[in-house]
Amino acid sequence: MPATIHRKSFFDQVKGHPLGKSLKDVQVKNMNAIIDEFERRQMTLLPMLAYFLATVLRECGTNMAPVREGFAKTDAAARAIVKRARRKYAKVINGQVYYGRGYVQLTFDRNYKAMGDILKIDLLNNPDKALDPAIATQIMFEGMLRGKFGRKLSDFIAPGRTDFKNARRSVNVLDHADEIAGNARLFLAALHIAS
Image (cartoon, rainbow, N blue to C red):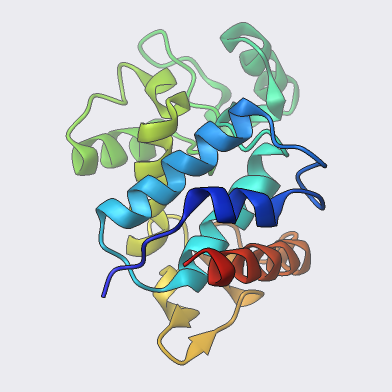
């Protein structure tokens, strides 16, 4: 049976470490987008939802909002960051630079095209759509569940198996794996109370 998360209870539980003593509207909005997608897909594994939330916390910071690479406030600033860092995806293609955007930092034109094809939206010509919470959520779910960023999340989180540390391989090898695993455990405890 699909999980239903009682939002007030969940938000009451996640106040404090690591999100702050009181939640800001932007945090609630973005966590709601992620929980909405989980429920829309009729998913049942709360550890997966906890891991999505922990991934966003690591990739985007405590606002839990989609970001441009380097937490840049503008397209121009993000372009400058990737150019200085000599990223392979720093080149301009059709007027766009395909630096990291969203909850999981989608990069490279081929990945914007592929994910756009999956979602049936034109991310190639409109890469900033990856900053919209609803779209960023779909990108994260599709990428992690299908193994588009690495391994499939289900390789590590499945019925009877919860390997939060190695679940990082579904996004970015093992960077910050212990930190994300710890936060996933915190989110999971809150989700158990709220479901």
